[in-house]
Length: 474
Ligand code: NAD
Image (tube, rainbow, N blue to C red):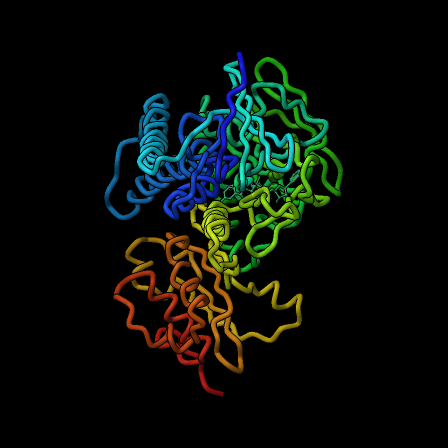
């Protein structure tokens, strides 16, 4: 089959939340856009194999939890029956609705789409190999935006070829509900999927090699989550590493190493969620001046331009945090920079959310970072036991804290653990972007009774004048 030669103004490599946002904005700015991705529709890992399917399953997991908890409050349901095929279909339907919608949006914007994987031949030439030997395209471009994302880390020494050993993609396909599931990694993915499988009926063990779940997150937030997870999971084993895994016909034998010694344990399935690596190799970047650092991230400037002036990089492949919303914003900046706009990627803060039960969300400066930098901060905390709304939900397992500058009262950061924390953090992110001070949050009339009041109360606490908490005067 002969090569198809395409002349493109802007070619975007990868159609995840970074890539498709960049392509759509570039098209809206009047540029000629080609979007390259192996999938039939835009969406990338986030929509097809990540954020969206996991949140669909987490919602059903929350429903199961809620139904069980309701019995204590006088409403008892019969034990649920779980139709895995139907659950899978519903989740896949959510993904299809979203991704086909994006396909329509691409079409209406006249974004040219080429299916396959691209690699640079020269600084302005890409080849795209289609999957099923459908020939290849060669694209001559003026600008390229690399948005190729990341992939799961493979742990050395583990037999990951076995169908019993899953990565996050395979776990989201819900092959079955294993009686005993081992989750390797107590990070975002490990804890979210542990929550799903536990709710569906698996006995779940999480092993984490560091001394805490969600390393890097403030301990007062993770403590609340750890308490609930420990009560629901079979075991949470910190400072523990999986050093060997042997998969047999009906299960896996795993060697768990801890400072006190090693043990062997049997599981029906294993999920490995030990981090992600940027997809920067195999792209032919050596044929360009773009620089890849020792961790595999493509180096970029404030416009997300690489050392090769015509090539930009955004999202997971261009550095941490590896989060979809950061990729989207970078994509918009790159597209606008290519269109000649005077823009820079310069967020005051980027929010992070772990969609466990309860959720954990944070943004801006954390207490751990402030302590490490020796920076003085005033921290206002509001425990959800004092929130009327949290009590009515039966979810007092929460905490909202706001970090402010002791002199200027400028809002520097926030951390929230609790039901719906991921939605609540948006208010503080907005405050930080607006350069707000604690008084702005405290004097804003929040609707009552809502969980959003906990942000106002935490700001009041930071200013030393909380209504619903009282410190006795000495
Ligand atoms: P992660 O970095 O969040 O967590 C991996 C964990 O595995 C770490 O705590 C690490 O200490 C542990 N670990 C590594 N090797 C181990 C070993 N041999 N034995 C035991 N523990 C080990 O990575 P992830 O959970 O795989 O997620 C990858 C990335 O995807 C995240 O960094 C995040 O950026 C993104 N993500 C985001 C969301 C979200 O926004 N809600 C959800 C999922 C993934």
